[in-house]
Image (cartoon, rainbow, N blue to C red):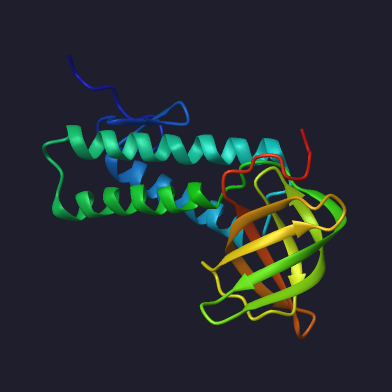
Length: 193
C-alpha cells in the first residue's frame, strides 16, 4: 500500500491528516506552528468570550496533539530535529489547551469577602466580583496576590464559601489589580446552571 500524495502543497508523501487535509511531515509541522501561533495570539488578546470559538479551538488543539503524537510514535524515519519539533508542538498545544476556558463567562457584580491566609495572619477584603463562570471568577483586589496562591471567598449575599487558586493577575488602570481565581471542587458556586 503506497501513501497518497499530500494535497496541501507538499511534494512528499502524505503522512498526517490535519483538519481533513493530507500533509507531508514538513508541511504538517509548519501548519501546526502556524495554528499554535494564532491560538496563542487569541489568548494574548483575551479572546475567549465566544463559547463556540473556545470549543472549536480546544478540538483543533487536541487534534494537533493527537496527530503530532501519532506521527512521533509511528514514524521510524524521523530526524532528531523533526522529533524535537513534534515534541515541542505537543507540549505547546497542551499548554494552550490548559488556557482555554472551561465554561462561558457572565458579567455581574456580586459582593464577596476575600481571605488571603499566611502562616502568621489572615488578610480580609470586601470587594465585588466582576465576571463569573461555573469554575471561577474575576475580581478586583487591593491585595498583593501572586499567581498560584490559595484564597478563600465568601459570598456576602448567601454566606457560602469556596476555596480557589489564583490563575492570573494583571494591573489595570494604574493601581487596580485584577485577579482570576479557579475554584476547587465547586462547579456551580454562582448558580449559573
